[in-house]
Amino acid sequence: MSKLHIKKGDKVYVNAGDDKKKTGVVLKVLVKEQRAIVEGINMVSKSTKPNAKNPQGGIIKKEAPIHVSNLNPLDKDGKPTRVGRRRNEDGKLVRFAKGANKSKEEIK
Image (tube, rainbow, N blue to C red; front, side):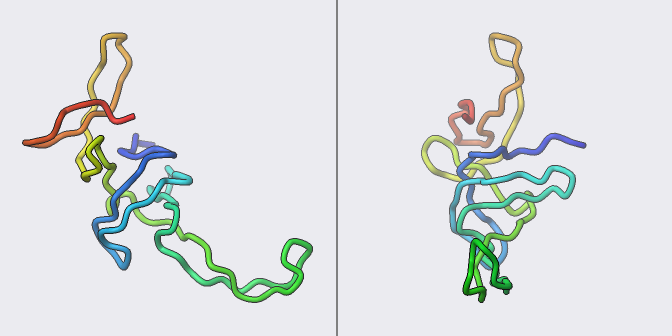
């Protein structure tokens, strides 16, 4: 399994698909499938049978996974950025904003 450029809790920008140019927070990362579930992005309708949680049944809306290649983390200015990795002073591997006019600051 390889490391991904996004983590749970990251604020991300969608750069492809039906929800292009929208932003949201990563709720879950599916590493093996290289997909992520983002709040309010890639909503699908799902039919449900009546159960204790939903006694009426019917159609519910929920987020579906989206491929990580279609997501870019937002830097501190709220702009989408590419991600690089480097070691900080403590020797820990951290992610940083990459690009020509980017701050090159650490992505939290």
